[in-house]
Amino acid sequence: MEQVRGIDQKRRKARGAVSNTPGRFDKNRVEVWDGWEIEEDRPGFATIVEDEVPRSLINYVTSPDLPFDRSINPYRGCEHGCIYCFARPAHAYLGYSAGLDFETRLIARPRAAEVLRRELSAKRYKVAPIAIGTNTDPYQPVERDRRITRGCLELLRTFNHPVAIVTKGALIERDIDILAPMAADGLARVGISITTLDPELARRMEPRAPSPARRLAAVRRLVEAGVPVRLMVSPVVPGLTDHELEAILAAGREMGAETASWIMLRLPREVSELWQEWLAEHEPGRAEKVMARLREMHGGRDYDPRWGHRMRGEGRYAEMIGQRFRAAAKRLGMNGDAPDLRCDLFAVPPQAGDQLSLF
Image 1 (tube, rainbow, N blue to C red):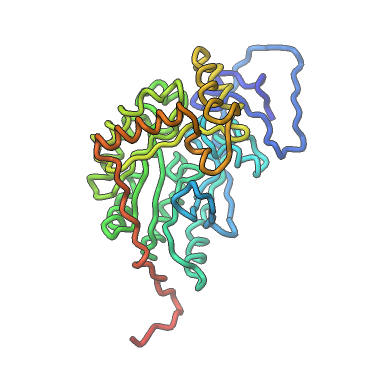
Image 2: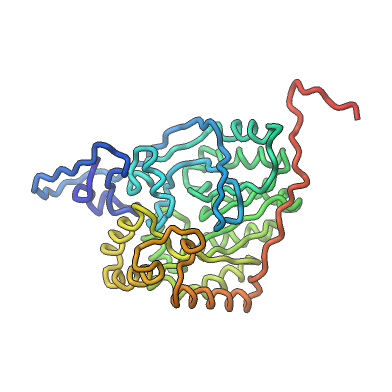
């Protein structure tokens, strides 16, 4: 597996991670460097997609920081390549790196809808909103051909099951034909995350995600179709994007987003090292300030994983960002809560061979 020294900038075009250090569970962690630096033309890193048949799809969560208790993920890994992605360390459980592997070695679950049908049909199942896109983006480029997310949405529609989606992908517009009628019944809502309005900075931080302008256009399309949209300023990067907070909210409101939220940059496990490598290459003049702000909010550490602290941090700087967000959201009329998704419409559709009721 290639190490930092072996990955030149040309090969990393349109990729976020600077390195590909082996995952923390890899028993064969080695670094070989023979001392020679020989220039040679080598191809970029292709995206490899492997299939997986999950035994279960619904992931139940107990975190008090989250507004949902269950989620599904049609994919593992994410080709968007956002360098700051908190989900990167999860790739280590697959024996892959949180760096380039996370962006280039994807796992698809083509039978996800089939597994989901079985879980929703179980007599013990109790309905509550399902979140999609909480770990990796359900509308990353591979979804265009694989259509696994769409298959899950089609299934949720047949069950009248409530769903909340988080994405950066403009591909979500393709599924408005499903989401619009679900939203009309109070069964669907969408969160679109925007980190910066600067297209050049976005391209470096989120190399294969749609541009900020394209994501804003997707907000408008969804709203015009009757799908409620939350504008997510996520993550706020201290010393790099924090000055854009009010402008991002205003841009989202102009496109029709009615509610908003924010999350501070999080650097769990391998993400801290990856992020600092990225800063050193792309923003060396701001690196020290960015990390100083983050450590100020986490008691001198790069990250504090405690519930109630990890999403926002603490201290004067974190409080200032919170105050700015609340003031801007109130001024723009985005400070309300979205209506609860309906759970009373849920019903298991009849299957072939089922005995029909006489009444």
